[in-house]
Image 1 (cartoon, rainbow, N blue to C red):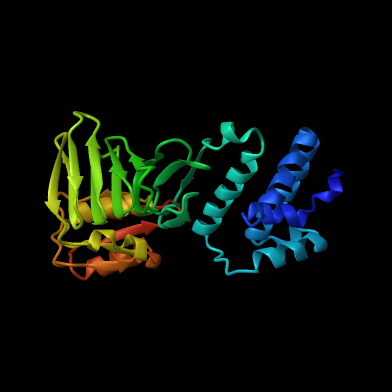
Image 2: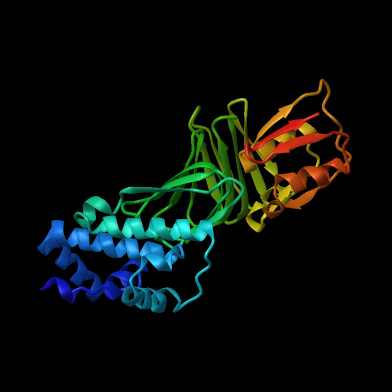
Length: 321
């Protein structure tokens, strides 16, 4: 097989995950024929593909631009940071997949982190949908192999797991493992603050405490929290804390200090409080769209609380007075 038999158009289809089994086998055989030279060719095509996604047409030759346009715009593509990041991770996983043998590379770990102030929606290779909250990170294999489907989470994520009775899905965190076979649930695991919770909306999950090996089997509309090293099961009565997947941050019943902690984590902003006593919050329930930004949220909060603030957006720093 000659090098020119593998076109950029075919490689673009591969990066999008749209090649047939026969086309995928052709690319694999082509890479095996001349790994060093053909890997460089694939890398160049990958760069063109990435530039097409990120909207840098001036960097793409006219002929390749037409190829990229037809492929990338043959279906709706949302050009947002979160989806672009998720797609690039998928591309990288597919590219590395043929860098060596399938059995060795299929389980290679890949990671993605949601930018501060945003959330990322992505699909894993088994069809499971994951939404990552701000500054949260997930580590997962390019393809799931073996008895279980295991991922590692740092931060908060909402999962809609594709049902597979024979291959349980496991979310590993610093404190607990959450095992499911197909369900809809939220996991929050912040090692820095030693906070952990799991909220179950549909299906069933088992939570195992790594500290003492205690287990709790959850039913829908329940929540498990880690307190003083032990798991506590409660009824889930308020879902406002999980509206972040809709771009909404909720402060229902939170104290001023708790609200500041949420803003610090979500927007990755430094907040210094220069007053001896924290102000009271008159709001019993407050929901604000995160897209409005931290400055807007503070102005809304001022209507129900007595405080002043200075916001330096260049330094990403807030002083509360």
